[in-house]
Length: 139
Image (tube, rainbow, N blue to C red; front, side, top):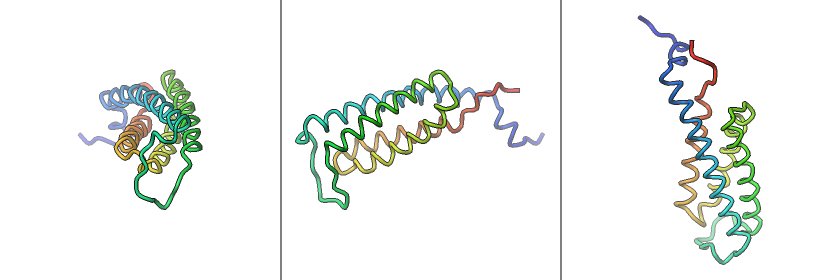
């Protein structure tokens, strides 16, 4: 029996995994929000806390960059709460804000490379989970 692409898309196991992963993505997004908030507060409160590595093409003021992280954290948290309720706006916003977070953490690489790679990885998982989840009931 040949299977069409739409029947694979409606497979209950795949839908369950994607739905569960979306809930996990909301948790990861909320975790990333908390961590990003703490990272931003650390940058605003004390510039001397961060390690300064090699001179890079982009040089950032850590206080300004800290405020950017705080604003990003508030947006991440609001979107995570929206994902818990299953809001459509939250799904679209999660993909966008996770992509912005990837860019922000790429620019943060010179200061904390392992931490940035961790957050980038979490954001990629969030994008995958939200993009593959189909909230319509299986037929």
